[in-house]
Image 1 (spheres, rainbow over the protein chains, first blue to last red):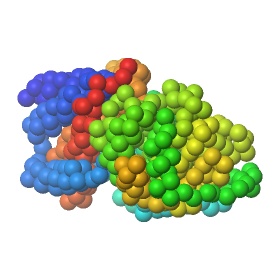
Image 2: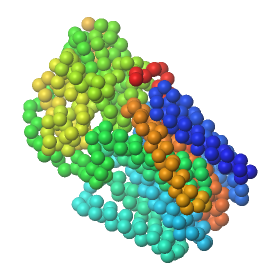
Image 3: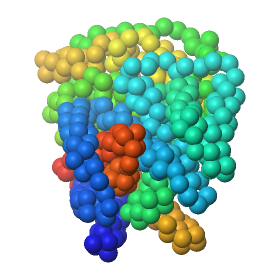
Image 4: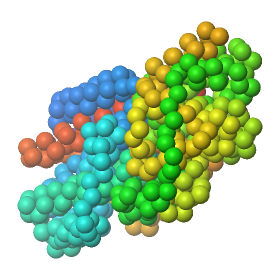
Length: 455
Length: 96
């Protein structure tokens, strides 16, 4: 039996790697997840035959509860809420790694130092990933609006982290197996995850979730060494390194270094140079905006998080069709980090059947804005903020943006006069060629469609 | 345990594999791929099962139970979400 288990784990590891490989190309991505899924299924089933196990009934109940709850939520949740669901499920994985560490450490007995070290390290990382991901989830879900900051926060966090290492170190190096010490270790590790995530602004959440994803992978890999489980070692480590690379790619797309994300305070203090914003926001009604678009030769639509929140993607597709019907050139400009996740907009627009050949990346489209009659910005803010280009004082300075302000006319659909997720004022909204169309993204797009159709 | 240096070699090779496997991923796949890798570390489920299977005291059983439940959530939720996201890619051929 043992050899069969090992063979199955080996096969699962191969399926995971090939699955991830396939997921990194649009053509094969869909089959990729099925390959990985098959690997997971066989690995789980064969584990029931692991020698010397008990508690089968409870185990099955636990799998059933966790699985059904996740299946139900995962099926029901709107496409727009995917990012926080990833955070949630990732946190669960981290928590599971922490639980494994707790059980193994509670076992006590005569373990080698390396064993204890790996178990404790995996538990530490898993716990941080667990509580941190839950905070990230709460933030993206809108339960926690503003970043929580206080003086000497990073120093305080560092102290908490240092304190975590005390019971952890005692456990590993002095064989201090007290229940209290273990409890303290996990409580401190969980607190650190919370404290570390609280001050990070929502705009940086994608990078943070990706980082926690990599950390969970690492924790799983470490616990794999503890349990002598090759499938966990390989899958966990692969995710750990792939996740680290992905985190770097995302941070690069946002022009934010990882260190800045974790230790900076984005949008915390009011950025200098905000006073420089002059003029007023000029409103427009949907009718006028519709006329403006209907008589344009070229329209570029810039979607952002507002489109996701308003579930406006289907209306946006309809608007595109109406405009195309009038012989107008319609393109979508997709900022790499528009929305809450890289690729967020692509997924939503794909859901609404917007063909790929209408979507353009930042580099492809930026040169076209000066020749564009109307740019329609739907719920995007920071990614079109000219301050990133021309105000070195601004916290978002240096971030690559869509040069929307260079178009002849800009229409911005926005719910209110508030600032973007980064908390930075947007000079685009005050520009002479910009008109503000206040309202819900879906409702306003609907009115634009009516306005264009009625002509 | 898989001993000393063997473990280290496995760790190193797996790390390079992870890095290589996604090194040329287009931006539009960042989110699905994060979700997919999130699913893959759901393999923690098998570890949680083994840990729970060997739990002796009620406390260990309880922690094991919670662990298995969370791990199952990670695996199933990760799969469902990734699959739904990638489902969106079926209509288009994708530009190079």
